[in-house]
Image (cartoon, rainbow over all chains, first blue to last red; front, side):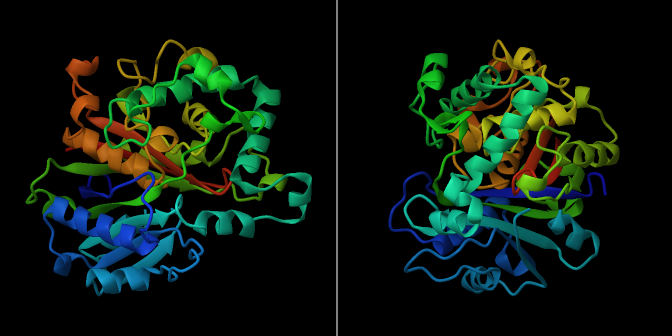
Length: 84
Length: 296
């Protein structure tokens, strides 16, 4: 598999102390920015992996990879949520 | 690793990997740390810091590491953060005295041995080499990867002072890449604690057991040093996005998009970097992933 696959885009968000923002909103902003940075349309993205399933903060919804996919307008063939 | 797996299997054409957490401004991180506690919390053993502190204590006993080694990691990475406007610690330099003056959290770790707790997110897109060649940025390929899971809770672990999963994971990754340590231009190492960087570099083979103090001295990993490590400031001084902090920084360095902190002849490198070694680990040194990225 050497050199067969590539990382083509990076998405950033504001970071540090950013009050009033939900965990979901950071997933979405980073995801949109990464696709835009890569120059890849969301229709082409057919896999989604979300890092780490944290306990939801008080007042926030539980952030699953299903929720992130739906908000990004993705319908992935592969969906996962993992720490690595 | 999972992304490459589904691409290789032909199940997907492009995989998006995202991280996000309102870790600083909400109670989510606290809830996670509390949920990991068990009965020994009444003796003061709670949170990830205590687990890694236990591992670091064992390493101090076995091969003589300690704060005099870790000071080089904390201050070296901070110098990188001071070149990165995005880093939480961009405007906060750290001298050796500042390191030794930082308060204990769990001995032997001071506050500055701990990674940051930050709000924010990070994401990357992984696709095939063929597709990448048509896209706008310089192509950065995954040259090798490997994972290893010693997998025992910290209180029952045999790998606290190494070898951790880093050793076997790196063997797999280097075998796939067909290169050796001498070919690596820089490292982006998962740095939840300063000790994590030391034990990872040691298990990767950059230096022998307990030789990190000498290897790291005189700015080895800092700007202008002979082996730059965690060039964004890392989890210790940039921001915490788990494994995506190191991976995304390696990608940006190889694409030559890093501004003032860009590794180049202007910042003391012989050339622009071609190959960067990255790591990620989980639990209390329970699981380890090693990635070798290259500019195609």
